[in-house]
Image (cartoon, rainbow, N blue to C red; front, side):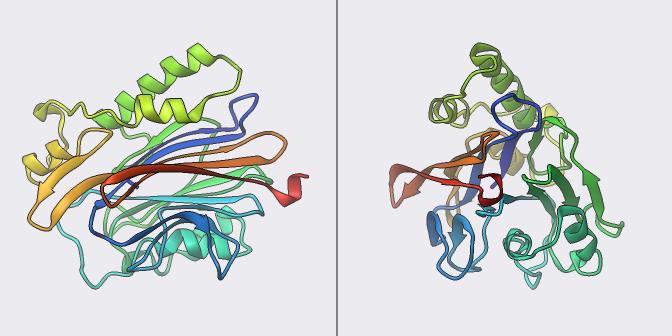
Length: 266
């Protein structure tokens, strides 16, 4: 997942609402969102590293991840997709889980991780970048936030564009229900790229330019890379959870939705 916008404890109907796009090579084997056979996790699954970029549980736990854009990565690093799985399987509160990562965060390439417990209204942002510095552990305040490939709420072009577009939709729907399927189609397919003068100048300009839109699609020597999954995860105040996914299956876009109720909020 390369961009995520979320509402946290600031909407009368939704204590939590998330929109996300996951960018990956189209030829990388991936399982669509489903209940995992071996644990209480609902999410997509990378079938090579067996991790996830976004998952939740019937206990009201949520975790999602983006990579930090950096020039050099370590091929021997631990898989970042295991971090959301670790949290969802643990019984730890978000802050406690974040503290437990201090000794091992440097074994991973750059990551941004959000872990939340909906029932206890606790959400924490964790990052192991800048490299060589202590990991960032930050309580996420109520509000609208965007996570891309830099720090939480960094003013990158795609993040600012998505935030502005979502605020316009939010004004239209007011305090009522948000039709996430419609919002996904309207906002998460945006291919408008940044002016090159606004790029962060971390990697090659061409690569950054191709990644600067909300919806990404670029040919590479390793195959087609880009957005192959869009999702909306909503939690209502009475604990109803809806996980909508629009995903690429071979060359066709498919969609499905899975609903459940957080057990502790019944």
